[in-house]
Length: 91
Image 1: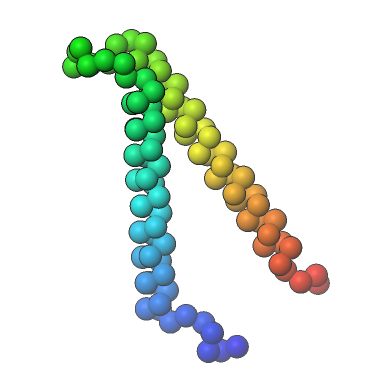
Image 2: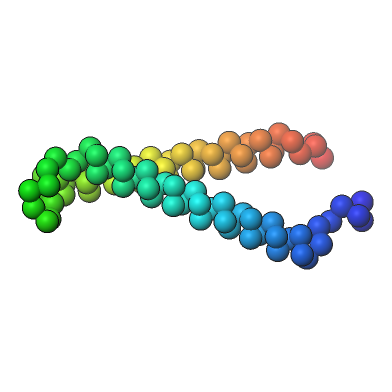
């Protein structure tokens, strides 16, 4: 199957495309985090800084969001691994 291997140019394009997708997904996750935690935790705009309870809420919200995202990523990896193992022919 000699003609199926991608050329170095195609590999570079694919790597750049994957990197762009990862960057876009990271920015989307960050924006969702900021929007969710801000709308949940910030109650007023009386001061330039957050009040103590707002700070605590934002910290907990961010921690929870990041733990959840990490768990989803781990689970996706586990399912992807299982799928790859099922697709391999027995030896």
